[in-house]
Image (cartoon, rainbow, N blue to C red; front, side, top):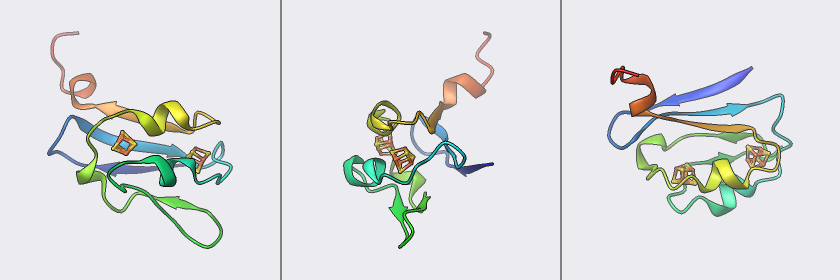
Length: 81
Ligand code: SF4
Ligand code: SF4
């Protein structure tokens, strides 16, 4: 199961978190410069502010379990590829 947060303002179309792979370490919450993520008491990560994402790719690179996938708009916009 994954959680999807869609947005349209910046380069990111959506941020996906694979709940089965996420070990609730909080790294993405701690390092995201735009505070896109939040975690509850159990460490479950949510994406309350996807519109603030600047596509720095930090979360995708730092997640130790590769649970985060950023989906750029270009990958889903059908630009001829
Ligand atoms: S790509 Fe950067 S700004 Fe966007 S959610 Fe990840 S860490 Fe935050
Ligand atoms: S960095 Fe990855 S494993 Fe850690 S809380 Fe975020 S999504 Fe889950």
